Length: 496
Image (cartoon, rainbow, N blue to C red; front, top):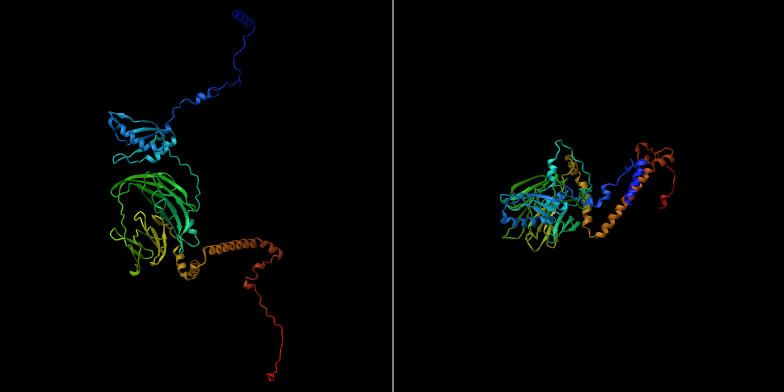
């Protein structure tokens, strides 16, 4: 039956033209992605997993008997940064080659391993160098022609010198207490410290100010962080595993950090730019630290404190000496005092008993430079106090001489402020008066602005005569004397 139908169809084709089976010119066939999209998405790619692979160099070369122990050590160190899905230890002549490949479950874990494990010191002979596997292609394809780096967008961190605008010119200092769990920033005041900022676990060890007071550096296991601005926002982070010591350049543009900084030990030093996260240079040096200080000088005021404290005697005797004529201004005592810190102006000095040195009587005392005790501040398990440095004055020598010449005029203003601060008036009343004065100042500014804005209208109403200046211009004054009779009374002398 089918053969009959085919024969009839062939006969019809012979009688007429054979139909065309070609697609029209504007016909668009379904693509493979539309038909097999779910299958193609699962197709393995050539670069799959490469972004998650790191290469660890300077690994110990071991034989089969110690390979399992080496793998356990590597797993313990690198599993902290993420899940390791695959590892490869190339070998030759029965020993590993000294480098390995580790694959993480995600590229972010690989980046974390490079940031924190690069430079990890396994022992005296082996310091890891960790790189991403994809970095090899990047370094091999570097263009011979230099290209200018892209301009980074500006980040506004606020006024980094805001504390210098304090109308009362209070200096600030950082305090670590509660055995290092809490860190606070305070403004120095004669009556009591004023808290500016306080945070829990802000640092893991201690803090350090930059030379001009712009940045506050905090120490962490994975590196250091810089903070600044009015609310102490995080400015920058620098990754350096186990960093212990840092130092800023005088201009605050660079910071150097190192770890394992003990006497006679090999120390890894890293130098960073404070405005970028880029590592500029690393060096391994023999680092020495002198940790004993017994004499503290402040050359600007020619004042020194002879501080006596040792393991045999903990009396903490203090002698305030004017070094210009070696006059003994005062002798005092702070029992078990372990630290002495001058403020940037040289007017105040702090002695303290750190919890890091003694576990009892932890506090800091505030003195004047003459040796008069002002405050005793007890902090639970107090650890460290550091004054915030000030940048050099922007005044010229001529301006400084002029201020010294007119110092008596300014002294009256300062004495009035001192009397106000030392009065028995409550802090609430003083704040209320300051608030009222601030409101009056703002109202006066608005009134002056309105007065100046209405000047053209006044001129128009007065026919162009500037009556505002009539009373102020003495040359335009005209003097006229007017006399008139008021009263007359005649009293005869004889009647008296």
